[in-house]
Image (cartoon, rainbow, N blue to C red; front, side, top):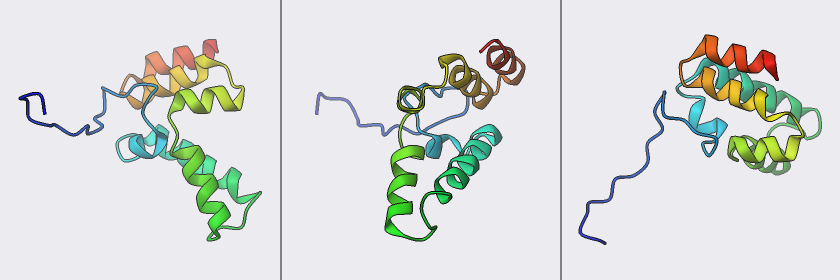
Length: 101
């Protein structure tokens, strides 16, 4: 397009940002797998698993960026920043941020 080759974005541990989704990060991080499990469990309380409503709710919550989850959930930004640091491989730094809130 501009004379450069197109390089598609591939999520990598250590380079995650608040613009990455939980579904992108769950393949690379245990913390995000746990968060994905919790989101699935929370959604299954409101919608029956296997239905179209369940899939829509799962895609709209786990498929949205962390910054979007922060805005819509009302949870403090420090929690998501701590989880993001833990997903990037900086577990102790993320735990410190997470505990500060």
